[in-house]
Each structure stands twice: as C-alpha cells, then as structure tokens.
Image: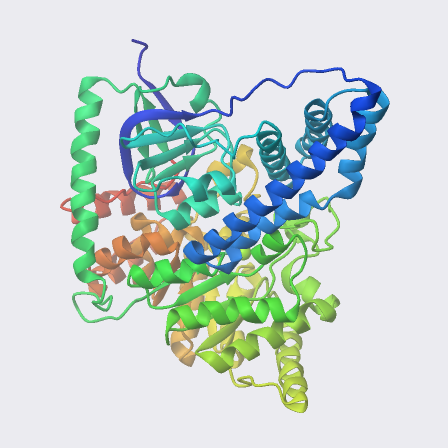
Length: 594
Ligand code: PEP
Ligand code: MG
C-alpha cells in the first residue's frame, strides 16, 4: 500500500467524512475520428438534432427536480446548460464539420465543444474557467444521448457509503448524487465562487475543493478522510491517523446531533447578551437551511450571484420572485438584501463590467449602481415589492463617502415613488443600511450612524483595503489578517458608533463564521454575526457557552496588542483553553491542520 498523503484545499462545507473512495470518472467510448460517406451526412445531422432534443428533455426534467429540492434559483443553473443547447452557431459548426470533412457527428461535436471549452479555460478569469465545465457537461450529455445512454455519469456510485472524489463536479452531478450514500466530497478544481462550492454547501456534505491532485493520487476503494472544517484531505491514513479521525468524527457527529437541542433556543450569552446569528446566502434555497439550523434571519443575500444563474442581470420581475421566495421562506425573520456587488472578483460576464487593471478598487458595487441607475432601479423596486411580503432590509456595498450613501437613499425614495404612482404593492419604509468595508466608512462611522438604519462590517474587503492586501492573490494570502490590530480598531470604532446612535452592527465577512473569532467579535461589541447557514449551530453553541464580560475582557486585551500574529495566538490559546470540551475547529478554515 502507498504511504499516507495529506492534501490541503478550500473547505467549503463543514464536518468530517471518512470512507472508501469513489472516483467519479467520465469514461465513455473514446471519441475517435470516424469517416463517413457523403450519403451519410443527412443521417448524422438528424442524429445531432435528436440528441439535442433528448438532452433538452432530460435537462428540463432535472431542472424541475432541482426546483422542487433546492429552490428556483438552483434550478436556473440548468438554464445555462439549456441555453448552450440553443447555441445555433456552435451546432452549425458541428454540422459543417460533418459535411465538409465527412466525419461522424460524435467526433464533430466533441471537436467543436472541446475547442469552446479550451477557449474558456485559457481565460485568466476564474468565471470563464468554470464555464468550461458547463460546456463539457453539455458535451457529455449529448455524447451520452448519441450513444443511446442516459447520462450515466453517476451510475457507478457504489451501494454502500463512499467519499466522492472528482476532478470537477458539475451541477447535474451534484443534484444526482444519492445523498444518503455520499459521506463527503473532495474535488481537484473549484474555488469559493464555483457552482460546485455553492451547491455542496447547500447539500450539507463535508466538502473540500481546489485540491488539485486528489483524483490522480487516490485509488478507488482506498480510505479517504475529508475534513470540511480545516480543508484537509488525507488519503490512505495509517492506523493511528484513522483511529484519531474516527474518534474526531464520532465526537463531531455527536456534537452536531446535540446542537439540534438548541435550534430553537435564542443565542444569548451566559450573562444575558442576545447575539443575532444570521446567514449569508447566495441563493434562495439556503434560506430554508438557515431556518432549519436555527438562524435569526438573513444578514447578507449576495444578489450578484443571480447574474451567474441567469448569465445576465435578471429583470425586476425575476428579482422580485427570488426575493419574495427568500422572504416567504424566512416566515417573519428579516432578510437583508444587498444590492449588486459587481466588479472586483465578481465582474461576471453578462453584467457589463469591463475588465480593469485594479478591479477591487475600480468600478465596483455602489459606484456602478450610481453611474447606471437603470441597473439598480429595477433591483430597488424588486426589493421594495418583496418588502410587502415580510421584513426586508436593503444594504449597499462599498460605501466610502456620505455623498454616496445619500444618493443611494434617494434612489430608494425614487423607486418607492414610482411604485406608489403605478399602484404596485410594496413596502416603502424598509430599513436601509450599508456595508462597512472601506476604511473611510469605519473612520466616519459616527457620521454615517446618524443616517443609516444598520451597519454590516465586511471584513473580506475591509482587511484588503486596510492592510493593502489583495484578497484574491494567493501570493499574499497570509497577509490578509482579520486579526490585525488595525482592523480590530476599525471594527471597534464602528461598533461604538452603532452603540452610541442605537444602530445595530453586524459582521458578515468570512471571519464571522470562524469559531476562533466568536468571543473576540462579541467582545468588540458586535450584536450580529452573519455567516454560512451551516455554521450557525456551532456558533450558537459558542455564544450560549460564553459570557459577554469575559468576551469584552478578551477583546480589550487583543486591542492593546501590536501585531496580528500576537492577537491570533492569544485568541487561539484562549479559545482552545476555554472551550476544550467542544469538538470545534479553532483554526482558520483552509489552514493546514487536522
Ligand atoms: C466582505 O467584503 O466582507 C463581504 C462580506 O462582502 P463580499 O465578500 O461579498 O465582498
Ligand atoms: Mg465585500
């Protein structure tokens, strides 16, 4: 047997999964150049038409199934694939190849679509690279139809529980997984914004993506451990490691089970401070997960992901239906809908944001909205209309100046006036707040606090701008430190401004979901933590086991420290000591560890 091997990737769904590997391979009849006679061209063209029709019917069935299981918006991922089937110029090329070079349709199809996928893959932008997966998925479906098979990609999943290892996972793979058999997922490719990451998070299976070589290094049936808390994957663990992980897993599962008892208990510290635990969601189906996990509402709906599932900006009606779906799922709990935060690493094609040299500091978020009212007005109208169905708040990203804030507020007033004039049902008086993610916003928090209804601190960006560290650049990833004393001071300033003016202050950057930071954040004065819905139960347990007085002391000490390293070490020691009875991961997610 080969030696054990540890790989580290990006943890995208929490928990520990351990079991025999099932390698998802996509073996099918090799695609070879098959020459045909001139009299067979029409037959090959007819085969293509039939394969497209069958694939379309199959996709429509899957879309309906996804819609029932996971909500309308996930189902729309299938629309992207359906759209490829409507790409007549691509299929014209296939037909041309068949006719001009006298090759069979299998070969022509594969050649043309591979070339498309290859072109996507060569782009720098991860969005395009992920679209290559979509094209290949469609190609596979069509080849399966040509071979007279249904899409059999997952037909080989064993009957007993297994860990799924794949080089890439497509939306249809994930939706077809027999969930009860898949213990965990590990993938070579994928980043935090990939469909794979988003969907596995919704399904709630421990998952790690971006492992680069997990499929080439593993053999079918070998034992694999996937730690969705730390991002570590171990192939062929030795007896000792296996025993350690088994006991960790049992302990974790028992812990998760025990968390069900606190689902309906309000998150309150031992000394009576209520902390709201909110969810960050990218698609409406996640609102249901949040509720099932005992969350207090949606703290951040990243609406820009709607562009991904529509491949363009959705119109007012489409947005209204989506927001309403969230509001209704939340059954009276608040939904904080953030206006499009496009640009930066979310310059999705279809949104009309041109490439820039320095996109994070470029034409982004509120700047785009103010320059292009035609883009934001339908969104604001849709949000106000959804407000007629339950509590909704609107939030603006990347505010750096009071003038921007006031202009944004005026747009809400204009949207409300229009709806009033048109007699469209809506709620004009919804709370309006802002992200605090640019240092200027934190430094002026006392001024902003006079005018806003709430703050939400976005540390992913705030750290980037405070420490001058590109959040997407792996080369400087270690310098992106939310525990930096300068960042803590900005958080503290914002929390104090909020407290003085009675403005609720939430935090929705990734750090809000790190158990390591819970006590510190509460101690800094934050009353709301907003994170991935699957992490809410763990955080609730921590809140219930903490005292605010103790948290405030810890935060006070941390604020007096000089370096990020010092703060981290101090907080980490304190948490490990204080909560040694809980099987919670107190490292940073994605960091090397067990
Ligand atoms: C943030 O910047 O911390 C944040 C929550 O927003 P996003 O990650 O969507 O930029
Ligand atoms: Mg941000």
